[in-house]
Structures are given as structure tokens and as C-alpha cells.
Amino acid sequence: MDVEALCSTIPAPDVTIVVTLSEAERQERLLARGPTEVDRETMAQGFAARVLNAMRDPALHGPFAPTSWLDVTGLNPAAARAAFIALVGNTSSVSQVQER
Image (cartoon, rainbow, N blue to C red):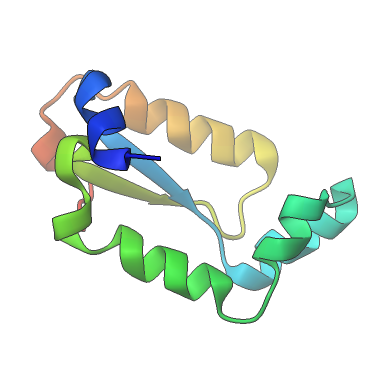
């Protein structure tokens, strides 16, 4: 698959929001809901760290910049949803959103 060609066909977003969660909590939630085979693959040691490191590399953001991050560790689903809605609903400039 030619990812670069694919990205050129996708309209660039105003902002990309990456929702994160501690790895322990992520795996706990996956196990509670019943993980799929793909979920099980993501549970391999070091997988999440490699993905997050790649996501933090500004060179890889390309058309998906600016990228904002929302950590929902410790939040129940309703609080996580409210935090996301508050972030998305912020009508002020993107520069006020936590960016990495």
C-alpha cells in the first residue's frame, strides 16, 4: 500500500487528536470487554511504546498536523467523553490545546 499516495487523497484535518491511556489501564479495558485478535496483538510487550514514540515524531505527522493529545488515564468513560467533547468543542485557537 502506498501510504503517501493515500494520504494525499485525504483532506487534511484542522487538528488530529490522539487519545491516550496508561498501558495498564488500556489492557485492563481490553480484557474487560473481550479483546479481539488484533487487540491481542497490540498487547505484546513494547507495542504501545513503539506506536506512541512514532506518533510523537513530528516528521510522521505530515498532513495530520497539528496533533493534540488527550490523556484519559484514570477517567471513567463518561468523564473521558466529556474531556474529549470539551477539547473538540473549544472554539478558541488550536494553539491553546496541549500539543506535543
